[in-house]
Image (cartoon, rainbow, N blue to C red; front, side, top):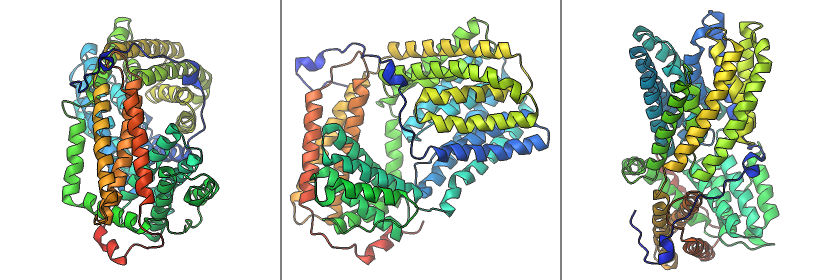
Length: 573
């Protein structure tokens, strides 16, 4: 990216950022929805596992597990969007597995298998980041495809094994969507509750608090836009987001729509199972809802879908900031695999998975994940050694142990990645037992070696492959924020501007501020690049928040309700 600034300090090069120890391992509060992926993956895995147990074919668990693990995805999405997202995950998982199985059936060369595994890991990383699949991201894909690469395979077996994956994936899709029968607007309610809680924190505003509130409000609008046909509950949720937006845009401690106690009370009621709160209309409610109706209709139109596809292709294009991360993943996974193979590990797929799991948005976060993954895996090996005798009591005991660790992994991983890895490691090792018992010492020794070498090789690749595009992303985000702020000021000051244009301009500015902070945080954790324009970042954020506050205060009078004629513009599901 060409440097657009002529100031000499912008051309300086920053050294390796500080790499923390204690903070990387500190436990946090669990996610408010940790139990959803935990229960989903247990249900999605239990039915195929027990079916295979009943017919005496537990050796096929690896193929059904590939489909069952798809139930981990999409839990933050509204059900209308989740259906397509999880279906895409199932198809992507099947395609990755097909490449791995075909490769395994055609060659037994460890060098070739490692190369294909590294290429798959890099492709999976880029595609998951570009599509923004959310946690657990590419790691599950890499785990499945890397393990399949080193499993014996004959060409005639491949269609049946892929059919098992598709069947288990279809069941996982049903499990992921089943809660819609009980609570159709559950994801939207949680997203709006988070926005209200974040807005309540703006009673004592600070730059980080305002940024967090902007991100939460933006996420709530995106969730509502993707939720499909408006319902009375969704209409109430949209009005609550208008209040949250006004609170973070123009915080007024101690009163009005920014009163923190009222916002927190609304958040608690929204998150609960009872009726959604019916707040008094905030200023600008009518035009905001008019705007989101128009935006939803535009997104669902053919032009909107084509625009979304073009945006995805741009994130994958030649100038994409994801490409350096893809190169890191490719180099790290290949290096880890070849090091393990050179040291005599016959199936070094765990080293590939370890290296692939390290790569986060920047080198600082990758360092944190390196510590977390290494500690979690080493402790998990000890847990495996303790539970192995229990799992060998009977095939049913083995199935139950795997289901327990599947649940434990999702229950713990939101507190810290290393804690979840303590449960993931024995689960992954126990999967090998479905194909037959292995010497415990060999399994433990190989896994420790794979973990250490994978972590070292992976982080080495992260430091050697620099992401010089991170600073360019900041420049583009600054330009986009400037344009969005100018547009919001222009439409907000124009009395003749359409209501939906004013509402869309505010949401575009909020989205640009979220992207700016994300770009700044990513670049701040990188090294060997131009020094960040920190003053420009801070000034742009402050100016953006001031514009949001000004436009919020200039919005139309409260008390209006959205015209009934707007709803038909949404179209059918």
